[in-house]
Image (cartoon, rainbow, N blue to C red; front, side):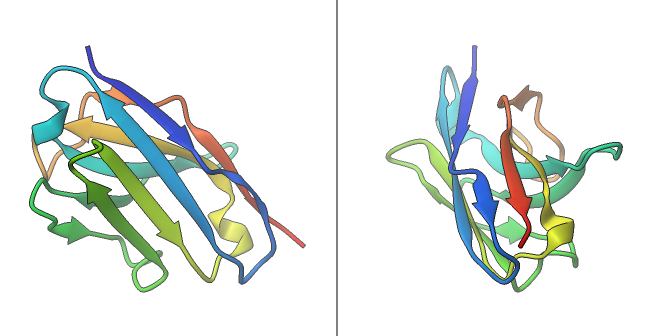
Length: 118
């Protein structure tokens, strides 16, 4: 069983920065691709970033250049550094894990709230 535990969410002003962490545990997780998704109130969950075991990354245009995903394989932890935050970045952010880099994984964390507001 894979478990994902996010942390680091909170309230930040527009233009500010925040760093999310997700600790992964369980069988096989050390070889999985890891990613972040977000869901704003009343909207569908959308892709934010993904990183392969060897560090290849993918971002949608909405966050490219502002967000950076990274991972520490020794700690089975994935991070999301978010800079130049905008009010439209407000959402619950979910960690995701799975064996395939180009597909959404089967495992999800419980989510952490990020609110960008003045």
